[in-house]
Image 1 (cartoon, rainbow, N blue to C red):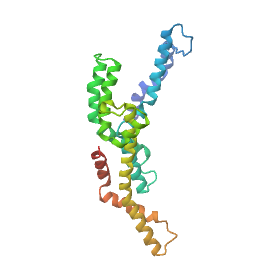
Image 2 (tube, helix red, strand yellow):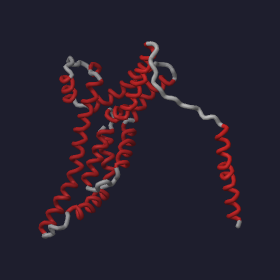
Image 3 (spheres, one colour):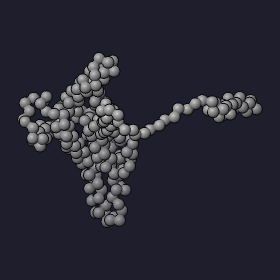
Image 4 (cartoon, rainbow, N blue to C red):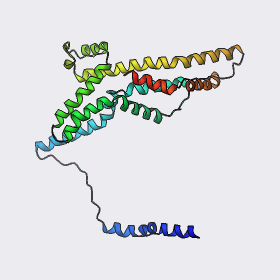
Length: 251
């Protein structure tokens, strides 16, 4: 009986608010939002519209730009190779792999992001520099990170494709040349690491298939036997620790 009485007293305020909500909502004026397209009256209106369109375009492409200029590409590809080698289909699920790749990206990019925040974002928010200066100061740490990972061969390729003059210093290389060279270098390194990760699992598949064939068990799918063995091997060698350690040290 005490519990029932307590529930009544606990639910009474909620019930009262439910009754009061329509009356309160009727007295509170809600703002009206109108969206429309009007003819520009002066050149300033046209310039402002173009600026807004440009900002929206940059914001829509910002996630892809950040992904391609950080360590995310290499990390997510290596983790995908790992799942493919384990033959576990959707385990871990895509959300887990992408989430782990994002956190590892934040971890490996922490020094670079701290420099961006200290040299560009904080002064811009404090009003000490304008947006153009903030972009240039934020660009320098990202370029230094990409220069540490990019290969000279890839840089030479895109410099020749852009038909620009031969650079003498890293400062002479445009960011639009550096980014694609960095991306294909990351893809190469990711595939190299993925190949190394894939080899032990491939050997297990071959051994299991050979044993089953020698025993005459041709109707038994080898994956039914090799999958538990691969998972057991991965657990025994502390695979996640090794994979994450190798990825972090590769930067």
